[in-house]
Every structure is written in structure tokens, then in C-alpha cells.
Image 1 (tube, rainbow, N blue to C red):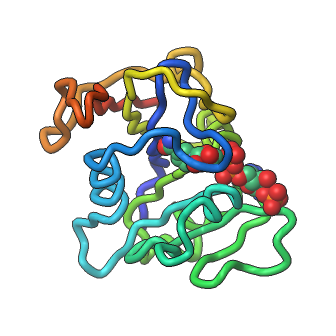
Image 2: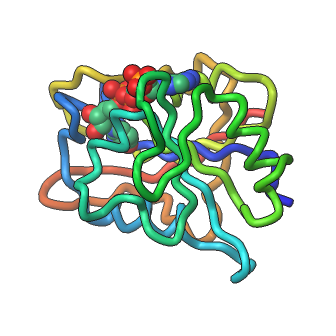
Image 3: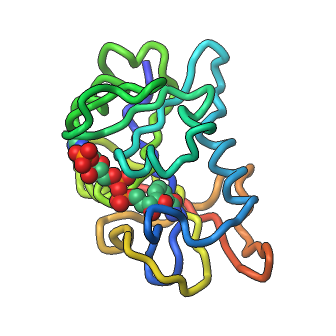
Length: 186
Ligand SMILES: NC(=O)c1ccc[n+]([C@@H]2O[C@H](COP(=O)([O-])OP(=O)(O)OC[C@H]3O[C@@H](n4cnc5c(N)ncnc54)[C@H](OP(=O)(O)O)[C@@H]3O)[C@@H](O)[C@H]2O)c1
């Protein structure tokens, strides 16, 4: 059975912005690689992780890259008439969370990752129905954004030491500093 912990993965800049006009305002290859690794890797080769995202985040992924491979893709939408090809469709946040963590799909799911956008992160961060782990890539730059995450500090999240396989020092790519941080809320 999948763990009931829900994992959030997000990269945010100085003002906690995460997107502008349907895309991520920066490009950090090491962060993309981190996202791919953490959302794809399972201990049990028989299982997959699930990625849960809002409709706009799904369509922000270039068509040739979706569904995200080797992961169960779940798209939230109240408007889409049918499931996007290669993904499951959910009409609310709670039902897929239950189905993936303890319900009918949990036997083949190792970990559940919420991958955006803002209202989906917000719903996960505000919920007290399950423990949450937040993988936050702090991007130390000022970018124009129209999409934001709530402050983890204001919503009961506490910073925890990074696991051994996640570097904790500030890294730099193309003159942009960034750092992988991990937060938890029980
Ligand atoms: N920096 C990062 O790590 C990161 C990660 C992900 C996304 N982003 C960026 O964030 C932006 C997209 O995020 P966004 O916040 O604008 O949109 P979004 O959350 O991806 O999608 C919003 C849509 O999802 C559906 N939805 C959300 N919550 C739902 C719920 N509880 N039940 C049913 N449907 C639900 C609704 O679709 P319907 O209107 O169809 O009902 C809603 O209009 C893009 O710029 C993207 O690049 C950044």
C-alpha cells in the first residue's frame, strides 16, 4: 500500500512565484533532473509513483512529454469532458488522494507527488487529512510571476535536514543560485 504521506514538489523564486503565462519563468536543468528523479524513482520495481496536477500544469507540459513516463498521471479538472490521453481524470482533490494512498490504486503506487499548480499546492498544504512533505527548490532570483505558492512557514511546515542523496548547499546554474530544501507537516 502506498504511504499516506503526500509529497509536493515545486520550484519557487524570491516572491514564491512559480509560473508566468503558463510556463516556469526560469530553466534550471539540475532542477528538472531532480524533479524527474524524485518523482520517478521507486524502491519496489513492481510499483510506480503517481503525479497529481491541475489541468493547466498538464497542458504546460509539451505534448511530446506527456504523460510523464513511468508515473501514473492524474489530472484535476472540473471542465474537461474526458481524461487526457495517458492520464486519469479527477473532479476534485480528495478522491484521487484517497484512491492513490489508501484506496483502490494504492497497491501499485509507491509515493504520491503533487506537482502543481498553485491551487493544487494550496489545497494540499492547507489539508490536515494527511502528512505532507514539501520538496522546495528555492530559486534565488526575482522573476515576474502570475502564479504563487503559499508560504510553507505560515502553514505549519518545518524545514528538515535533506536526505543524504539531496545536496543541501546552494548550487549555481547559468549565474542563477538555487537550493533544494525539504519541509514536513504532520
Ligand atoms: N515552478 C514550479 O515548480 C511549477 C510547477 C507546476 C506548475 N507551474 C506553473 O504554474 C502554472 C500553472 O498553474 P496554475 O495554478 O495556473 O494552474 P493548475 O493548478 O495547474 O490548473 C488549474 C486548473 O486545475 C483544475 N483544478 C485545480 N484544482 C482542482 C480541484 N480541486 N478539483 C478539480 N479541478 C481542479 C481546474 O481545471 P478546470 O478549469 O479544467 O476545472 C483549474 O482551472 C504554469 O505557469 C506552470 O508553468 C510551476
